[in-house]
Image 1 (cartoon, helix red, strand yellow):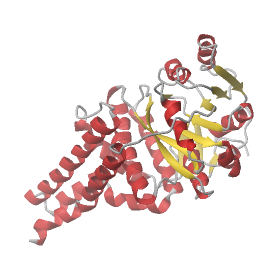
Image 2 (image 1 turned 90 degrees about the vertical axis):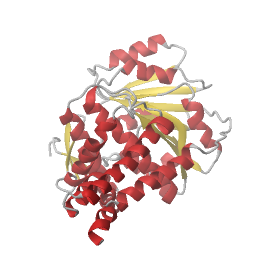
Image 3 (image 1 turned 180 degrees about the vertical axis):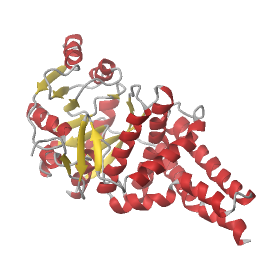
Image 4 (image 1 turned 120 degrees about the vertical axis):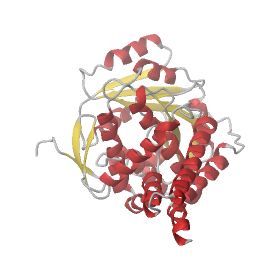
Amino acid sequence: MFRTILPFLVILPPLAYNLLALRCGHRYFRRTSTLPDHTPPVTIIKPVKGMDGESFENFASFCCQEYPVFQIIFAVADENDPVLPVIRRLMAVYPEITIDLVVDDRKYGPNYKVCNLMNAYPLARHDLIIVCDSDIRVGPEYLRNVCSHFADPAVGLVSSLYRSSHVHGWTTALEALGFTTEMVPNVMVARSLEGLTFALGASMAVRREALEGIGGFSSLVEYLADDYQLGNKVHLAGWRLELSDHVVESMMKEESFREVFSRQLRWCRTMRVSRPGGYAGSGIVQPFPLALLALLVSGFTLPGVAAALLLYLVRGGVAIIYSCCYLGDRLLPGRLWLLPLRDFIAFTTWFLSFFGNRVSWRGHRYRVLPGGRMVDLEKPG
């Protein structure tokens, strides 16, 4: 009897976690939300390096906002960056939008994205600051939705969930599935169990008062996970963090499996040093190794097969609900066959993240230190 039950006990943690993620997602996405009509002036800072997928269209989506007063600042370090003609074209196409361009290569620490933010910040005209990645595309109601949360004076920062609906082959589909089946469900569970204590880097809106209260962008320049640090520092300073109802789109470009895997490993090592306890504990809810373990402890007999199938039936069902009902990314059910491979890669990068502290980011090599700080390995001295 015990050998019959054992495989089902093995899969219990990931099975329970998937059901919990479903419940938390249902409570968030099915809630009734009435946001106030609050439209304070806002500055959007976009640190940019190189070309992303459909860069002009991504940038243009921020120029088409149904919002009264906003400013966009593009921050670029290299005067020969190929993205500069795209930005100048944007400025010509949308002359009615306040768009500023900063080209400044000054460095203040190893996080060069944050250096761009520091160089752009003196030009920010307004007291709401949005930091948004260069590969993000938004709908026309994005600013109205994000900024409405700041009607509550206790709110210091607002993040946005993100998805990728447009993928190029199976390699980018694997990464996009990670948003749908891991990132967003994990955020839903964290929000329900402990509240938001971190930010999501795709889109972060912060009050100037909260930002300057933690030391400004300079307080982030030594860290790899600047998004996590920004949210966590604002949280620890006593402000409340919220999620926007507007899901932004991360526009992917065609990449090799090696590039995708390297980025996944960087993200894992980033989270390991940022939240070491919680990250290590997340191993007990990894579905792929525990489905395999259920098969092993049963000797590949019927109970083990049944347990593994049960786990993946539930996991697949939860993934489809998140994809079709919550995020609307159109990835599933058509790519459901990739889910076990996605879970295998997730476990592999989770496991490898404990063996090494070096990452690649935007053409640079770094060593990540305990606590999340990093050292540029290519910088002289």
